[in-house]
Image (cartoon, rainbow, N blue to C red; front, side, top):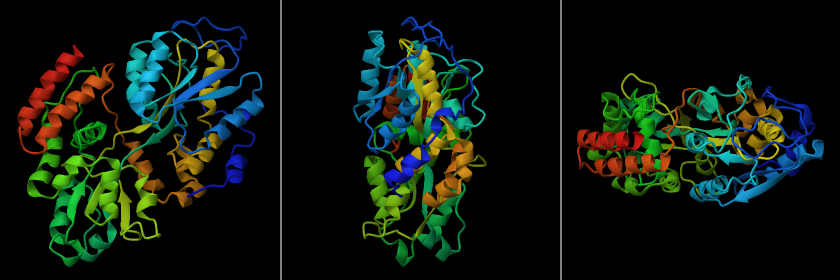
Length: 432
């Protein structure tokens, strides 16, 4: 749903005095030392670095802050659209101990790396996050310390062909077993001709790590435990990977899914080639389009991801966390600005204008947001139980190891046990 510029700006009115996070840094106007140990002191103009704003509306949010803080204006520094390029730019900045970026927009998977390198500063211990989604706070936490303010969140959902389930008299599945059983009842009907049962994002890229991690969580397991030790040789991890592998071996998941990223899988569902799809909420508006681009408009529904066995389904979080650079000159301003971005009014306006999932819990009951995004209730359920990808300082190496081990196993070689034991050995070496 598009929101007019006037509506969006009206939603931002009077935000300067609104606060969700109550902890404050020092009110000192003196600049802090550009070192990781500096306290949250110093007020003045700052730069906010994040990926390219493809919505075209972020500057309006910043204008709301700048109007009320003329001596602490925020300048947007847009980094490349590619997440890898954003991370590389931030690391270059940190390694030179530059104060050019005061606030950085971090993918949740960067939090552990940036925190362990002391590139972002842990927020004050009394920071109040009680109004925010617990899962979004967890994504910004590393070894029980909060290293940023959640700004947006995201979770995958199960898109399903409601028309086919209704015709077969089948309920929406809550487990993978029920999903395959539903497919068995539908696959031989004329309406299912040319269709497959399910897909996620199973090409060899970051999406495969997301889908594998989600399957492990949905089987009651973890890729790494709370102490940071890999646990992919567990029975639960085996059950998670087997769920995907069995889908390929029975033909329920099409071989083409080995090439599917977000867009390819979305297009397959939208073209009527899949009965079930795990993907991010952005799919909803595209699949619901009535301009002829979607063959499933009016025919699909949305639910939380299915579980495996008796375990509830769990999505892996996406989103954005606002961290304060350890080398920022004006940390007090940086912290207050990050908190401002998590205020209810900013979050609502940003959600409506940019189709981003808010981190303020109460907004999932907001009538205007529910009307704009009918999947809001299901997304909230998914986010309430969401997990994270491994919180490790060398995430790039870890995700590569996961992809190298899991991708071949999807075709049956090596077997699941061998693939996971090899992955366990690799991850143990990376964790040492």
